[in-house]
Length: 472
Image 1: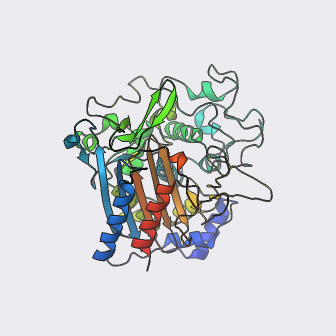
Image 2 (image 1 turned 60 degrees about the vertical axis):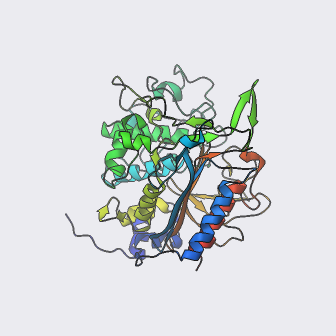
Image 3 (image 1 turned 120 degrees about the horizontal axis):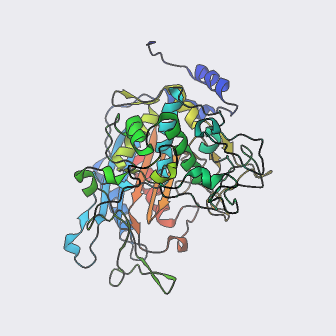
């Protein structure tokens, strides 16, 4: 094995120029060679103030939260972490509630995409897959947008949401379904082909979607011969000693007991959505991961055909991790692919992963800036499996992370089943924040942010963490 050497920013830039046509931004290069600072701690007065502020957000009578797990990293070191509320709630018998703690695992929703991307980049390093090869070579069948049949689709495009795949026809199918039957014209489940964009071909337009990650998971399975959830354990979770994963049916009893149930104070009455945030009359309704009365159902059985349908294991949103587990992944990226003495990725691979692949062009719109339409302008720049937060604010809200601005970074957001979450760090300073909300008590759409596309309670959490924990 060749001895490892420190790479200069110039050398890294030359490496990236050779393997991608995407421009390399200087702000991304510092992520290759951070130097962890000595052990840091947040002063007691600031810790108390931050705890009080987050408790107020959790117990807001108009917008209560079921639980909240937060963590802040300054100069590469964890400086603050805490948990609030309950990971398991029994509205009829509050004494049976189980508080959230440092071991609590959450279904991290779309932050799973970033975790999956780390696994992909390990396969790229080993030469098992290529970011720029036609994924049809791995799938064993032709994946083409029928509106642009001559344009190959690559992993780079899938990871950057520029593949021309959309969620309009769904993004999850049971393990017995062959993904080929969904995505190819003439397939049994192809329908009207609504999964394919007609306005722009592969590589031409950004649209955030979940379906590309189902394809990515399928490619990973076909290239390795391993089931996606178990492959991710081998590639990422086990080497870093992370609890959790993509398949709760395989969890240990202790991991299952530590998994948070996700909640909403919402029910349906005659087809209508009814929210009741009141502490007196509103009950928390379990959405997913309620294992008090039964074990999780396996996502696939012994007859699953590996490489047939990676959507079954949720590469786009089904990973369960704790805030501390996510912090280790954040430190991995901050430290150029190595954490706790374990090297998972090479520094140049991390730089490539965080390099700009797409940026919104307002003069000549080249992508959708909101997940579900509208004018929120949440998405302004994207890397390989990660969002770049540019501190944009204004009438269309934008991606601003802290009130008044001043903090930009890279990472990912999560929003599903009552959970909302953020994983964001600045690779120039190695400062970052993580929050995981285990359930919302009021319709968040009725409380949009004041200066961003975040919900108002998310703005309050992010601003508290960044101002109290990261300010100098």
